[in-house]
Each structure stands twice: as structure tokens, then as C-alpha cells.
Length: 119
Image 1 (cartoon, rainbow, N blue to C red):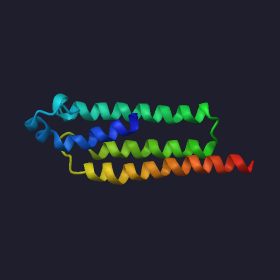
Image 2 (cartoon, helix red, strand yellow):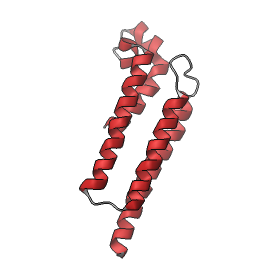
Image 3 (cartoon, rainbow, N blue to C red):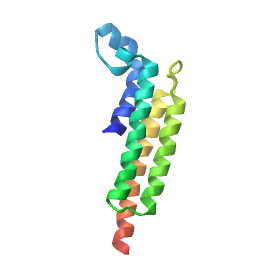
């Protein structure tokens, strides 16, 4: 939930003017793009924490932990790409990086389970 909300806020930043004009109450329209990006960062931080809790709770192996580290780096890069004054990289962050994160998470969990069944 926090992972999806974080990248949804990033994507919503590019619609801020439209949302204000139409009276919509998106986070970027109500709080501004700068605060919205901070909220997105905080949500992604919590997502990373929850991914780590999955590692602990379900006794995942090092393959999954490596997956979480890669996802953390990708989330960091995503937030480096999108800046309050320059939203030109939102589509790269939203479509490319988030797509990669989803696939990496799936492969990490699948690999963890395959290794678990082999041992």
C-alpha cells in the first residue's frame, strides 16, 4: 500500500494545475508539489521497511534481502529524478522504474521460494 501510494503521488504531481482548476483534492494540489514529494519519499521509506519486515517475518533468505536492497536503490534513484521544479522525469520514474521494481520484487520472492524448496 505504501509503495503504490508513494508512486501514485509522484505521478499526480504532473496534474497539479488541472486538479486545482477542477477543484480536486489530490495531495499535490492541496499541499503543493514539494510537500507531496516529501510524503512520497516517506511512504517509500515505509514500503522499504515493510519489505524488510517480510524478510524477518517469513524467514526469507539472502536472495530476498538482495532484492530489497536493489528496490531501495531504485526508489532512491526515482526520487532523485523527480524534483519540485522539474517534473520532466516523472514518466521515467513512474513507468520504467516502478515497472522494474514490481518485476524485481516478484523475481526475488519467487527465487526465495525456489531456493527454500530445493534445500
